[in-house]
Amino acid sequence: MDSLMRRKLSETCLRSRRTQPRRYRVRLGTSQGMADGVKGEGSLYEYRLGYRAYITVKGKRKYFYFPGVTKKVATQKLRALLGQRDDGTLPRGKDYTLAQWMRHWLSTAKLKPAVHTNYQHNVEHYIVPQIGHLKLSELEPEDLERLYDDMLSGKLSTARLHAGDKKPTKRPLTPRAVINVHSNIRRSLTVAMQRGHVGRNVAQLVEPPQATKADTRALSVADAKAVLAQAKADRYAARWYLGLMFGLRPAEVLGLGWEHVDFTRGVVKVRRQLQRVRGSGLQIISSAKTDSGWRDIPVPPFVMAMLAETREQQMVDRIEFGNTYTEWAFDDVPAALVFTQPNGRPLDIGVDTRGWRKLLDAAGLPHERRYIGRHTAASIMIDMGEEISVVSSILGHSKTSFTYDTYVHPMEDTKRATSDRLGAFFAGS
Image (tube, rainbow, N blue to C red):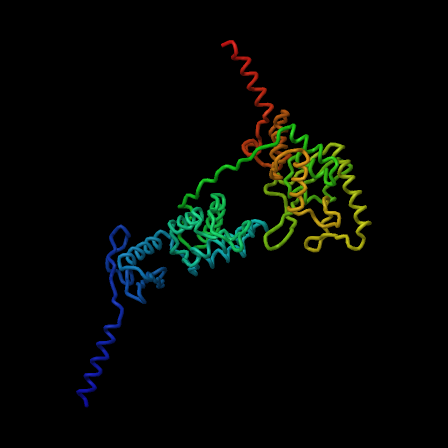
């Protein structure tokens, strides 16, 4: 009996020894600044189809798990962690996944509504499905490069319905869309690094694709005058004159309230925008990208007269629609918009775009984006010889160089006149 018990005990101990994880001592070179064999440093052992290790940080053990890797890779990861500990870049606190961190960051980041919605779209449709499962400490530059390549090559769904599609399709995304996603990741990882959740910002090690410059242009003086000639009879004549003469953004014009129109001084104050935010509908937001975004623009008397006619038309609309007239409000505050539909509802993007195309058709011109009015205004003002600083102020830019590089397009008539003068000058050569 005693012999049988001893044999069973011996077999139990043997099985126990066989199931114990194999522990390894990692040789640490002097380049890491540590001597080989220091207790607790470089311990690495097999654990759940991978390797586990711990290092000592301020007298306390910090454990790490490297799943599904070879001993060589686990050793390299451990050496990297020891190096981070010694140079002060070892992550502290919770080891978030990228999905967890980006959602947390979005919930606390101070972003404009439209920017927040855009970033949230990027996170949920592109980032989380592809690399959201990765821990911040595991994230590598190559992970971002693969994500960007997949976006550009059309391997990811665009999460947007195109004409004739019944569900989102996989179409190549533009470099601009990839740059937007890259900016999203970079900004969030910058905060994670500042808070000690990650030792480096891998997005700073990745070069995003170069965005192709948009093929923007301006209407010629003749075409601009043709459009405005048609606009005179339009219900929203003042809206089109403010856009083509002074370069107000479409959202800025549509966001104007009557408190922003000073009939005594003949001034229009640009303070806010009316934008449609995905998932939230129409919203009133500040127009100030920079301090110069808020601006007062002197307006000629004939445009002020158009604004007065717009106000009178609204009064007529109120009487005609009676109880069905809508006093549109944002956050329970009446918006008192200058430009509204006959029933009092705001002019959203769709209504405004249809009105713009109607004017272009009447003027015999091809369809262009509404934003071309801003480019046209800037180009005409410069072509008239106005100071670039004045043009920048009217457009709401803080830097004159941005105005000149982005919005100024030499008029065809001016280029032709220059060419003719050059031809006359060199004709006798």
